[in-house]
Length: 497
Ligand SMILES: *Cc1c(COP(=O)(O)O)cnc(C)c1O
Image (cartoon, rainbow, N blue to C red):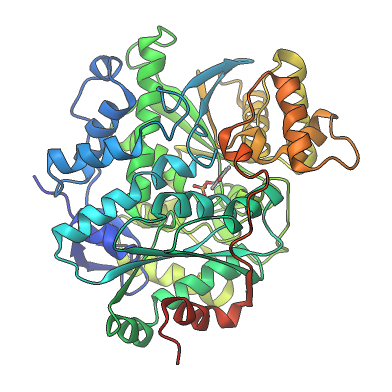
């Protein structure tokens, strides 16, 4: 049976999976959600014997029903190959009573690779399927990791171009280096004078600009999004939660149907929403623990039912979580509103107008699967140091937020359920902060000296993604104001006027 997707802001909009992937965002600003969440139709026991690629097929085929078996398997094979430095793709590491699900073994050493290595293939397959003639222009705002992962995924993919906007002073130096050295004639990287939310709002405004869309269509271009609002990003992220559970079962760490908890360091709410969908598919997950950094909008939301972005935006050592508008939360809001588009529209309007909204007690009652926690920068640093000193395992600053929140959760609840922590970046991506936390950063060391030292201390090889940056040439140096974003797009596409 075919699964259709509808918009959170207009239930009358109903599209296929491939159409939802092409559009990214619905025209009226809504996010596409599956009409129902399909269930897993393979037993957990059977999944326990599958490779990552086989698991990906078993999960994704349930959501992307208008893809043929051959199409989907081809996309999976192209995505999860030797770009990843381990054949397991997403290995589990047991340390100090938790299982760290390492999602950083892809091209850009952060978890965004898990979805962005397959999105370009899903998108070009979708374009073919829908007889799209225009060139696809990927427009993306990034808090650091999405940008590079999307650039790496789309670079030189025929029929596509990609434009990435990042907050000029809001990403780590390795992240910035990774982006501005990106090769590929179809890539364009732009720093903006503003924070991530400014970049994201700017991109959303361009997507919502009907006149601009028409103007570019006339020139043979069509926008799409690689941001985590695209269901082509969300669906591949469900896979690794299923895979992690199956591995624990296969390795005898858990019994069949034994529930686990999942802790996710959260920013835009995409990763944890994928875990929620995995649970809805029938994966035995008990609690979804949403870990925030000092920008703890989500923690406050889960505690009070009020989402309020009216607060100071803080730059932290976990920049990919420095977000005050978690776009994917809208999908959960819609779900808790019983898929009522009118409620969703009203709340999102309030968010746009006043920067806040409050959900009803009935909606709040449906959030029982979630637990919100947060860790400030000091606590996250302590989590890195403690784990390193205890077992020699080094985690990055984002994973550290999750690790710390998990500690707080256990203390508060006494819950001893086995727990998977999503490890979202390699410590080599945030070397400065990680080494600071370990008390090992030395005055005057550059990123590469720090990486070499971290390698010696941790026994981990410096990843290829970092090695490649040594001596790489800067190819992108455009910096613009937020109100110049649209004009910048025109200029890159050669349609300036
Ligand atoms: C993007 C990112 C996050 C946040 O994930 P969301 O899906 O946006 O919640 C956490 N950690 C790292 C390293 C990331 O790159």
